[in-house]
Image (cartoon, rainbow, N blue to C red):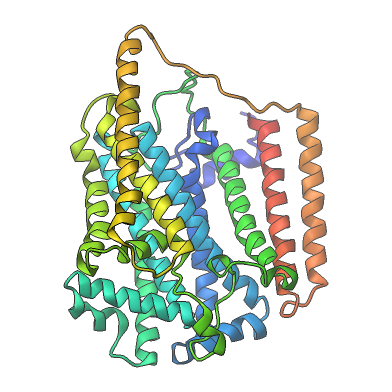
Length: 459
């Protein structure tokens, strides 16, 4: 027998051909199937940066310790701003992943448990982000805590206020928030382990090009996953670092600022509207509706959550096509439109009570348009689907010569080296945003290099 290669030795030693290192069909390398991986990569970044921030954050002096991290801790501004935007990326990825799962109908049958776990993960992600947002102690964090207490009271859960927000002192408040932030993050990690594709979880079984060949996980899947992870981390570093550059920071809307707002005792505090995090704009606007806080909270939180959780039980039909499940599709589209409408409304008019007339004008039309449009499309679909043997679409494939891919890989590797080298010449405190820009460029460039290597060797 011939001598095995180094990679074969690594593969055999680490059992990389064994479970749980399963392969994936080629269609899984489509970007639409990897938003779950992007969410996991963002979660990993949150854990890494969160553990470091724990070393410097002081619940007894929340706002001042947060600002000290930015101005006094080496790379502190990068840690704090990227931790914030890591949550943003994780939430956006979860939104897109959930919408894609619904559109493909993979919550049906055996995917029902995964859907429920995904909904719970999304709710917990919003919750842990809300708590983290409140830990800074700025004026917006104070408003967020007040709204949280009001929602608990409206739902008849005021007895939980001391559990989540403490006994009224600032020290107890931020100690509780920090504890809950860590606890909820740990629960998210545990649920991710259950939710993430594993043995027994079906990858999409229908390929439009009939390519169902399951290729080994090692090293093809590993390289792709690492590339997606580096790309995600690069974006998490690059975007807030650009926004934190002094020439840009003053022009960034407070909803997307990478740094906390002014403290509650600052003269500027009175001029800042009670903005929530952008991902809670729709919920804050629901609180402004004219039906009383209890009804508003039930409509904005309880009912949507229950509907999302029971969708697999309500929609048990066999066909995953959107027009073969019209009422669920129309309901889902209506909900998305409501979220977008209320978010924009909340950004434009935060904290302003809504009159019944305006409620009707904003809420009723999406119902009529969504249900009417879906059922009109369904009537057309019923007439033509019997004459269609199989729906296929080739899509647009990205094509690149091997030589061009090799050149791209080398050039992006050089960009990464230059960016990292440049960052060493910058001050880790005063030049923090510029260091973050360099690191972000480097990680994105490394991701491009890995993608080029993957393209040349395996695709």
